[in-house]
Length: 458
Image (cartoon, rainbow, N blue to C red; front, side, top):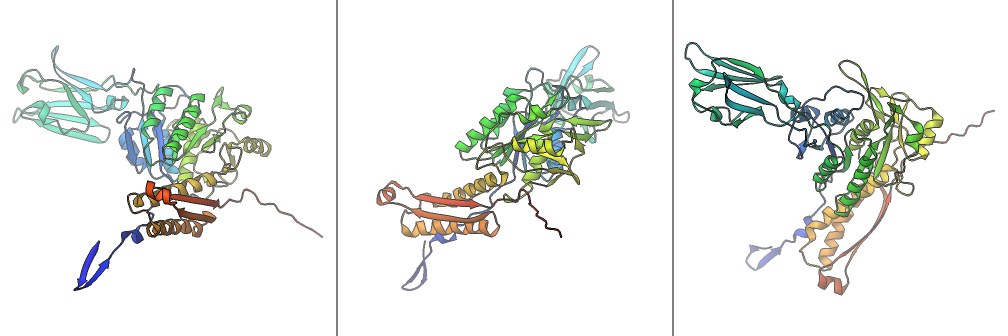
């Protein structure tokens, strides 16, 4: 842009010097699970557990791990209790059994109209309906009550229009006859709502697919411990890395005959720099008992904790906010689990993560290494994007390098990196082709895994 300041004096402003890397997300969680309420196969951005309950309803009673138990709200509560903040949640359901609660308004045996709950699920079965006729005016009034929500409508004109603003119900069958033919007084409950809680592999995989292009850093399948869950999550992590939406995933150990089995957990065959395997299960207080939940729910608590930390902060030795553990492993057993690449939880001044590790058996063993490098990748990509379409010359490449230097220097100052090297270059042929080469070498900061103490006494 050229701006005239004085006659014969011009100032050229080049915006390349103003480009910087903005905020880079590092703790966004993506989760897929079953729920009693809410739209199915739709990504919902949630900022608190209260908001989650408003969207997805309450969990049902725990039956020891049966197929009809709802997984999403249980996992979200653990995520938020442990510091999670931003969650992309997807409700999935078995389509064969999923159903909205309905209520038929009848005059005698003749159906006057039919109402249905806004979204499918058992939550709709708690909707109470009342139709009252006011003696003074002979006008009818409709009341809908669901838990703490109450809606009231005066039915003076068209019935469908009168309740079109309802947050609880829709009219699905047209009214038959005038309002005067509507029942004088009526009271009842909606029925037949079903959660479709039997959702399994295909439904969960479809839910993961909806999260592929979201700004997610940590992904998990709520409550799922079957072998297909880890397989689906690894496939998701591989695909998202290919499409430049890198993230990590968490799975948990399954129960064997209702309890943790050390050999089963330790003999897993997982080996991925992006996957974390968590054990044992956890205890959660419900209204009537202490529920024993498998490792997939422990994974939700760990996900919330990791999401609350900057990328360079290791979860090693950090305390989880949980009610208890389904198994308390001794020192020898914990050592075995760590050697087998399991993120194990121990009871020691609370419930602590023994070592923050992935299932990788090589250079990416520490969770912080993977998170630091992903954070750097996101930042460098974000810093480079504004330069696409600009001139490919020394001046612009110098500005690009300055932008990336500022971001990476900030990572060094935050102690995420020990040091880095960076070059931004292009050959003459690359200039003609519109290509620039960014070469980057990172040295992440490693956490202290243990402290060796040597004492000399005399």
